[in-house]
Length: 546
Image 1: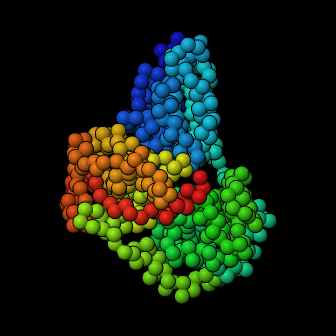
Image 2 (image 1 turned 135 degrees about the horizontal axis):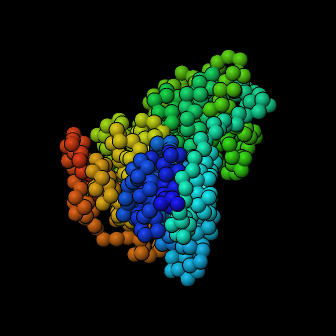
């Protein structure tokens, strides 16, 4: 008779499959499976809230390229994690949520909720460990669904099943999964489009991560300019023909060049309202092609002239081989000169709105960009402020930018930066937050401090839910529900054991320079009192989608 349990076997199986880092909050229901994961080599990061665990695991997966894993208690542990799970599911992040569940016989358990329905409601996959005989197969199936289909999987672990005696089983090796290559007809059609294009633009999304070299080669052969969705920012960093982000964060020059394109090819990008500015960035006469592995993605957000079902990297290689010769197309000397002079947001003139008590949010971002080391990973929370770090802070590559915005929840910034920091220990982690999001997710400030992470946490503090202020204020609505008294966030941070500074002008950033010089053994929180007279126009775009 084995002294092993199903909980032991599930933890062992997932560790063997590749669960190397696990986030979570441990309760009685997930105590044993978490310890089993640790016993078989996984590192466990105890967060202060299950929502933080889910968001950190999501960010870890985005930066590392490995599946995220979290472990939560039954019922309330899962409901606490649901916002982070919704974000991951909507972003198609490969993630396993190990969720304890009341036994089937415990009908009156105070922890009982419909965990299947919770998962399905936010677009996650619900699965279950059914018993001792199938424990290895059940855990393996959940892992493969997450990896192969890029899905967030809630793997329910009933308490009675977890406690049942079980024999260890062989974990079958995952068969090599060859991503689908586009059909010959589709390759020929896309090559034909590019041969005739005078002003082609490629827009790459998260579905094109891993295809940088191949897309750059095809773009060079076809004379295309390169851009990304916000979620894939940094994918073409350093390329002379990189427009950076398409959509709401696009520079005036990037918007001008994309609007003038005669062919736009989306590579693993959905061309949603953010990436296309509600379609206004793509002209009515522009030919639009989309390369994707999701059949449902074709034309879901924007009209489409050519849909190509296939892997971005393999498709780019095949199309490049079908082109007869390199073409100049959009890569003219005039465009090169424009990109040299106007490619970055800091090249765009603006009137500084700073005063004696407040710093202009753009000036803050530019000053930080100059201070920070090149090797950085920037995680951006949601809110009125979010464009400033997204537009003005440069990143070295796509692994340097984490943008958990598919669900548009504020409060995910600190946990996103936590997961990103765990995935890239050689880089400076930067959490970019608004005051509302910082306070909403502040539980993980304790986690970040406890782990000794040298993280820079910058709070664009306008003492309000700024999006609502600027959306409803011009119409004369009372704003008392969304405006708050001044809060000394630097003092709050020091109470957590962090270094902190209040910034009202660029000269106040000197302590940040000193902290960056080392040893950076505790986090640094910057409470930046920013001017708030003007709305962020990218959120004006956002409210059009409400």
